[in-house]
Length: 288
Image (cartoon, rainbow, N blue to C red):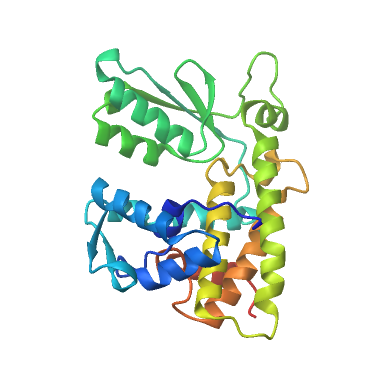
């Protein structure tokens, strides 16, 4: 049994190349390496085409899937968030002690916009303090405001900064962070990422040649586990986290894996992910 659970949808998304296409032959080869059947892949591709996120040219293993124009923006990962995480790990983004607060009051008649704004705030690492009030340790005002304007609710959003946040009677920053964010769950996800990255780092660093399918499989496994770890991570500064923090170790291991993938084969990794992250990897990982 493999140590990484990957859905067929995640696999297809991870195989998207820099030209917005997926080679079906490579897709089926990697799927087999991951223990997926051809039928699973066919059904998933059919769903994605019906949803309108992909078009298909040709049939079977000779087909080419192409991301549609409407779906393409969603395939660009948040590179700046990854860069910020690595900067924090290296002590290059120290916390200045400022809490960034956002509150919103959106009427029931605009429920969809309200839900969309809340989803964005949570995705940016905001923690709910109480009804309609959220806090972050990072400067997020521009990102929240941009989303609020997209949704047409910018007039209902309030921003504030504080160096003296108290929730109930608690004002110690580390204690507040532990109370407001699910740090145990975030730490567990990073420990899992580290456990997945370690054996793959050994494999990538060994002198034995790996086939393109094997390299793609490793890349997909790492990308999937990295996404699973980073999605709920509020990217709190080290000053607010337990020490040692498993996120820093996991990202260091992952960067080393990325470096090996970039060295072994330029286009071997899922290009949308690895080409966009390449600059970050070169900044943070030692040469291999």
